[in-house]
Image (cartoon, rainbow, N blue to C red; front, side, top):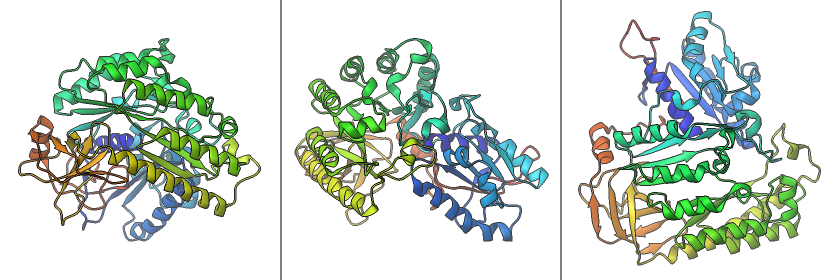
Length: 474
């Protein structure tokens, strides 16, 4: 979601006349789009702002803007701690950024604007997409859950759903541009449609995506186990372009801890869902999120997490050490776990998941896979010259290079080795299909400049003078 928001920010600034800065050029604008889920996000933001202070001193006309979840949380505190910041905007008013920058430039003072609720759905804003072949499509924003460890609902607000027609129109427009893969985004995609009275809307949306000519792959993130229903499993299994990939957050395998987290499901239900998914789609790759060291977690609780991880056979897992988030109920709980205990449990969990991932990947050796060639995953290394891409189940595949293969194209190849975090195909490519997305990438490809990345600081330089432009660019 933050990456998609960064694409919207990039689109807004490009529309306002801004252009990306070169690595050697001094920027006129730096934009931070922030997250607030983990404690180190705060440290990173204020650390980076501190590093920029000398540049701001040297060039007072350079502007610095901070947006996203940390901006929504910290608000005016950002300007107090870093008075050289020019603009602060929240999660509900991304579209205000160009105007805030202009006002700050005119008034020579920081502009802080934080809205409490969404006024314009972000998907109506212009977008500067990094990929010609893959696109994010928001189906909802916000969250109605009350997980005790999570600060997102207070920063993103209550769930707001887009109408299906708007979503499908955006998907069709992307396909017309050459995009072959879309990922449907929501804090809890399973509750999509509740706002307009259709509890089965998400499954219907998946099936509707299956009717769009030219759309080859559909993914979604993230569902919630408490709302995951069999109609969605059926839609995944019966719609050819919906990928057999599922990200299902577990968080903990302990029923007691799940209750303290207010997760509204228990380990038995979670495993039942996994079983139903695999019954309908034996080839499904299932990933998860797990928190280690939630307040009060005992060794017995942690053992339950290990048990569920072993039974679930996740293809991979995003594992996190619990950190206190001010403003969340868990942050006020007693029995916070000492760092050294959390670290030791975390290492055991990672070791287990590494073994499971490796075992599952080894099972794929000798099988044929369809790979969408990608840019972001890059080459595995210069020595082998392998290219990279994603299988339909989301696994990363490093495959033997071949002349004429471009990002956005689709190849089929045979897996020769399953590593813990990726698959290797050191065999000849079986088929290569050139695509419209590959044509677009080839036509518009420029070497990616280090340090310029959506989701990271976006920096800019002055374009040629234009009467209708703010006079600088990001």
